[in-house]
Picture 1 (cartoon, one colour):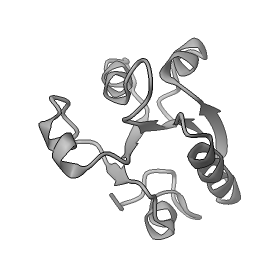
Picture 2: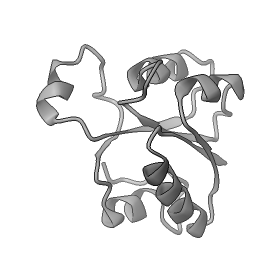
Picture 3: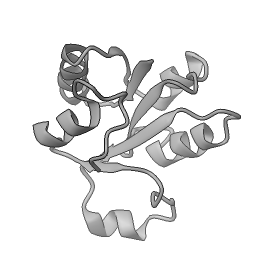
Picture 4: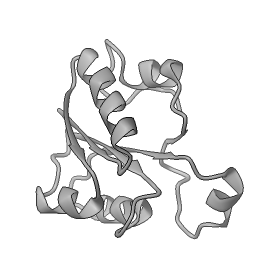
Length: 123
């Protein structure tokens, strides 16, 4: 399993990648959706962390594209957007875990920590 992190904030992507690597996951980071798309679709065993506030192609569009794959990967959305803006969005995040920035160590450990497959119970 590879954890793909699509996050335009280098500091967030780097710290998240370091933590996930410490948990034993193989991690690949992308600064935008376009570079993620260029790498080809992820495997169904992979896990994709998508920032909703990406420049260019937005995170909700990435999620829509991933959901249309024949065998979509597991996904989690991350955002620093206020809850009110998320509620006004037309995107459906109801079946998708949504983690709010700043990301807490507790939630990341529950979700990606040792003994998990990258699909923990926390959201």
